[in-house]
Image (cartoon, rainbow over all chains, first blue to last red; front, side):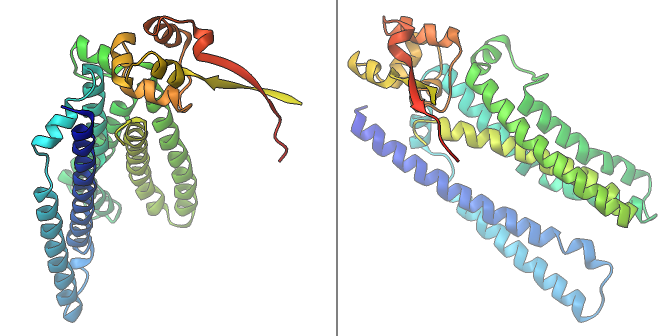
Length: 231
Length: 75
């Protein structure tokens, strides 16, 4: 393939990725709008309950719209052509960065369920299941941090050798640094909230861990993307 | 007062050698991103990577990297 047509392919792929990302953001917003009101559903009655259902219906519509848009701009033959660029090291690192960037989005629902269960336990309404669900959130965050740090991956020796170079080590370090800064800020805020209302302090722990892990993962993926000559 | 700063001449040497970033990466056994970030001054490589790049371009590390004196900034 000539340089010109490859450049066109890269531009088309960048445009597809932007549109897909926009679709995924809308999808996530819709999911938040759909699931968020669930937290207050049991506490409201009458017209307020109808309004909550209307909000959830709007969330479902936004979710489906985002899903359709993202699906329309899914990977195609051109994406494969662009992905095959570079050496095998580039391909392994690109796929890994995409995986790291997706992890926080993939664990969003899990965190939501974990936080609900944590709140139920703190309110004295929790049962045995809630103990299990409450533990799932922090565990998911720890897995994300483990992946960003590059510890205990189930990869073969060749993949590990291709993945772990100096640049990736720098990205890992910068990602974890960003996550650490968020964790410290979250702990301070959580401590303050806990002094005012102890239950809030406990709630702040899994939230801080989830946000810190997400920031570390997004920072890693962002650095990888910035380093890519194709943008 | 002067302050030493790293000057990267990798892009100039690579272009002169008629290599693309991907070709240099392949020959030096590093990723294309590594070549790109080194050229842009975003990433300072270790001695090992610097030597690999120099070997792939059949030159010396000093030809790729140098120190320039810059006046210290006043804030």
